[in-house]
Image 1 (cartoon, rainbow, N blue to C red):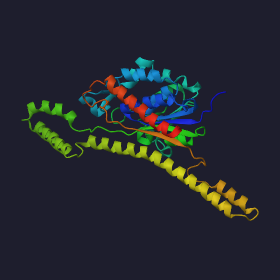
Image 2 (tube, rainbow, N blue to C red; image 1 turned 45 degrees about the vertical axis):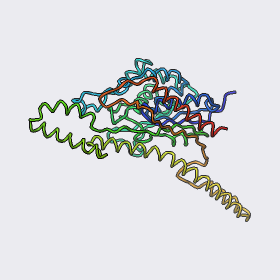
Image 3 (tube, rainbow, N blue to C red; image 1 turned 60 degrees about the horizontal axis):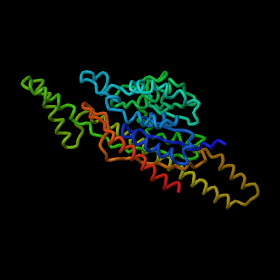
Length: 370
């Protein structure tokens, strides 16, 4: 007899930190009694990438891939003259996946027949896109062709502060974190899901300060007697002074800070909305019970019950879905692509992050399941 699949896994975005810790979380989840019950995995950004292999039960392949991964294989810094045209980095991850797996399409080809559904979120940047979707693109392995789903996964993981967006079908898409960094709502509304187990990474973003300008400043100092260059050096000096005061050093720093606010806010909103929905449903059930207890006139009891059943509340469902959410954070050394210089990612640092995700999941699962 096949096990009932009624668990939804939710994976947030989180860059390299996030995907490493998500692997540990997924490894611990696979050891639990909940793994055979997983019906769907919902992922954004790094969660879309790790979720694609988790849905195929290929966590060992994911671990080998991540242990070999280095920063230049994910986001490779562009030359300074290319920045206005192509952004801070070249998106090297698709080519790395091509080499390692033979392409993302090959990874997801088996998902249509897999017992676990994959749902991926990306942000719609298509010109004149319809606002009734909230600029959110949602792709499911049950209905999306493999080639399109593969591009959706890569687009969802394309950090838009670093790289250009990708084409997915007839849409232009980028990092899903802008619209839904933690796709809890999609798991909550999935008809098969009766229990949610999620990993939400609490990102500790590095500052985008003046480090990238310092090599340029050093080179310009040889020509500081030329008035325009002297003025440019003065602007760099002012940017460094602002950074020292804790202020945004430049416009790019402002934009990155705003991106952090957007992503953190929509991530927090997912859990807040779910909590408010559950509280509303509990109060509604309690109210219905109390009102019906007060009604004893023939026929009126049934009429009141029918009116409660017909009430059209915005949460659109009458079931409370229990949630087990692991909140991941770490103070270990950073594994980020780097703006200009890209130090190597050590195996020790990677294993520390993977272990951290496993331990956090272990603690929460033991607390909730025993």
